[in-house]
Amino acid sequence: MNAAVPKKHRVRTALKAFGRPLLAGAAAALAFPPLHLLPILPFAFLVLMRAIDGAATMRQAACAGFAFGFGLHAVGLYWLINAILIRASEFWWFVPFPSMGCALILAPFAAVPAALCRFAPQGWRRGFLFAALWTLCDMGRLFLFSGFTWNPMGSDWAFHGLLGDVLIQPAAWIGVDGLTLVTVLLAVTMPLGRRMALCGVGVLVLWSAIGAARFFALAGAVAESPSSPLVVLVQGDVPEQEKISRTDRQAIFERYLRLTHDGVARALKQTAEMPGAARPIVYVWPETAFPGVLEEDDQARLMIASAAEGATAGVIGTLRIAPDQHWRNSIVALDESGAVEGVYDKATLVPFGEYQPPFLPLQVVPGGGMTPGPGPRSWHLRGVTAVGPLVCYEVIFSGHVVDRHDRPDWLVNVTNDAWYGNSAGPRQHLAAVRLRAVEEGLPVARAANTGVSIVYDARGHDMGRLPWDVADVLVRPMPAPLPPTLFARFGQTIPVVLCLIVAALAFSPRIRLKSARSS
Image 1 (cartoon, rainbow, N blue to C red):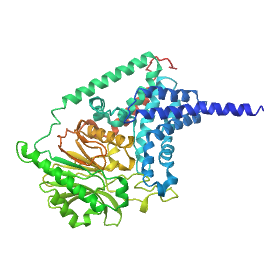
Image 2 (cartoon, one colour; image 1 turned 90 degrees about the horizontal axis):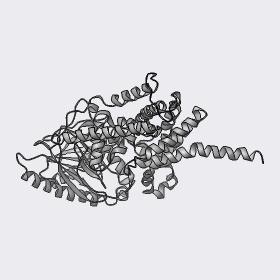
Image 3 (cartoon, helix red, strand yellow; image 1 turned 135 degrees about the vertical axis):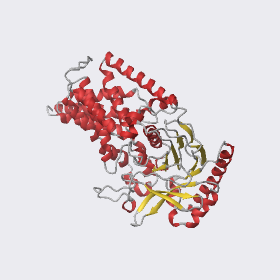
Image 4 (cartoon, rainbow, N blue to C red; image 1 turned 180 degrees about the horizontal axis):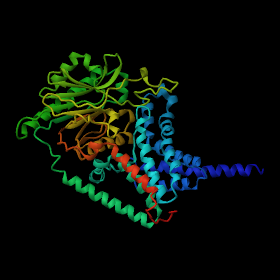
């Protein structure tokens, strides 16, 4: 009887120590796109910091951080389950694993800062060290398997519309990881008393003012130029079950031909009404939109060129077999006759989807996965300004989307988010695309199978979109690029240096800030 009391006490203590951070992490995920419930972050991180402060050992603090990270990513990545449900008859046993498994893998990236921040005294100093370590660990996800930097806290500010346009502008200088640093700093310090809260409000006001000033000042600089191409984004809206079954390949191909013909005709009409010389026209099909191997199908390429008569070039998502006989997830560029003018192979593959981690005892990626390409490239297609191609997932990697030695004038991203249904996943992916436009100072054209197909200018402003789950085309002139931003020049060196400065401030003996919980 007496032994049962301590056992109950231990269970109650464990639930209090780790259950609360778990729930706080789950709540913090509500700040991710598309909800953007940012006011919840100070409360969520307050729970975590109290658990860290109250932990008896560094190990207990790490466990609290692990629980927080698990809750954060389990909720933030809930939509991964949709990819399994598409083939539930084959992989029903795997349904619980995508979201929970990824959360288990990612949780240590929150455990490390929770443990190491205890080297700083409680209060704002510990909060500063925690924010710096959180950001550095978050950036470290680039080296996890083939890389998985999904949902950095900095993407929380990518609200839809003008508010988001303003708030994401500092990414041009400090990148999304710099935004993450500021976000976590605000979340952990604002609950530390009235003075800290007022400082946080001041930072937000300054942030908004600077963002608005940059956004409106550059309005003229990003306007389309006479050399800008008209892009025709073709959104086929093909359900993933149809793509997998491969029973309606001809119908899928004919749908894309019809949409391409209609879109190019619309673009030709627009360019005829524009002053000056005729604009180049580039049509874009989404990731793996062609239901075959386009490089090997001469007849299909001729049919595409016929449907797109009058266009300057085409960008088609397709699988291909490289000379080494390995499969590649690729984009093929066609000239006006249908000849292959350029090939780009996806360089960063999706773990567990296109890339089989070597430690897994089970074969979960069909065929053992694909082979990655060499990395960012710029295409110089005849009659078209230089363009940087990106396939799907690799657009999420801040600082790794542009060939630094051959900067393009615009980016084109092809994707197929149908795997994840009409969920938060495609919206989180879209936020990453928008942030890359701001970071690099380059406009982005994005063609998505089921949506959202969109054109962003170099400030991340929406220039036109097709909504989810419609088959249609979007015709827009590409906005002009901006000169290379500070982030485009120095990349992730900037947020790393900022993190080191913030961490150093945590140990500076000359700084005295008063807060309700300062030591």
